[in-house]
Image (cartoon, rainbow, N blue to C red):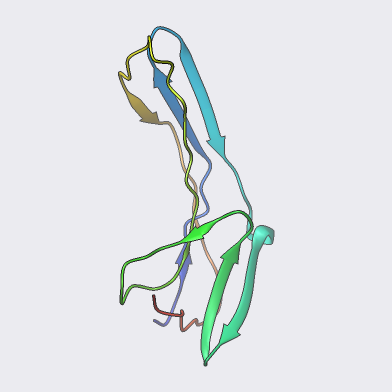
Length: 96
């Protein structure tokens, strides 16, 4: 993998039931950590898990969970925006 594009996202999730609930995920390039393992580059992000698809690159994954009250109904999920940047350099990402 010659170039690694890591999507740095600002995601706004809106769950609409009878009341709106909004959550967001924000991080910057400074929050990423890079190391090497067995000749591969490892990318990590605090409080993130990793992709688990065998053979895919091991990249950080952020999961957002919402609790919906028992008397409410899930109606819609809207992602209102995201941003990405391409990091300079060549990376050989550690596989899953």
